[in-house]
Image 1: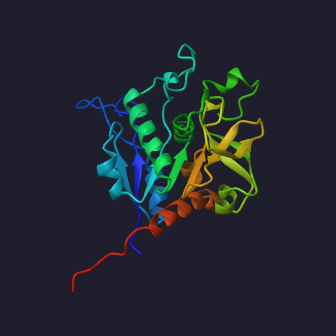
Image 2: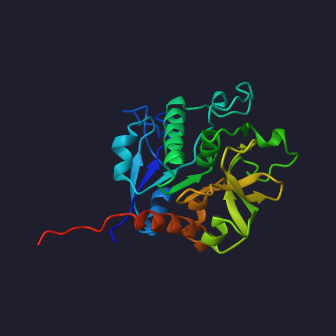
Image 3: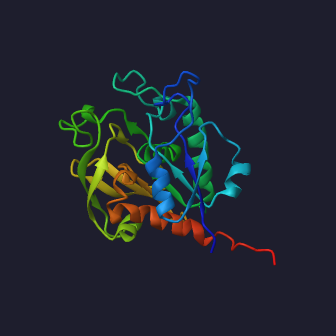
Length: 250
């Protein structure tokens, strides 16, 4: 069995870009996503934000990873664009990722892993909505530290979920950094994990070949935490199942 090729979505061209004297726009993704896919035995391939030529791109890929990043424009789910805590949206990225995920939800065959913003893209693509800012609905924000960065939070996973089968655990400590959350659940999605404050932390879709979405960042701790790496391992293994065996010239 040859290695699975995993498409990894990129940040928007001006989303958290690295400053340079020569360029002011970039397509990039944090290295831990790439590292986790490589440890799982996959071959990562970056999909720049804005690409919508899925008929050309998807036949090359065996699985798709939708990464974290900035907030989705609330116009995509009928939300509040005036919320003062919103991070600047990247409309090019919104359009391409929502189109990609909708295509994969219709297709139901390509393994799909969605992380943080990726979970939110999944929910919106399926017709769901988001809370623009968790502190607006919770008195305590356990999902970020005081600087707005990583916090280790407790997550409870449903025992009969795909996620529990993949990780072999139902009680987790996860690396979290999100300020938004699922509000109304998208069509066909199932909640597979929640935080101690009731915020939805994972989704999956019964009937899909393999779909896991987590609101935390497993790539951050995967190198040291086998339970988090297990998500990438199972994803890449499922993607590799359909990969044709290589043919070598004699």
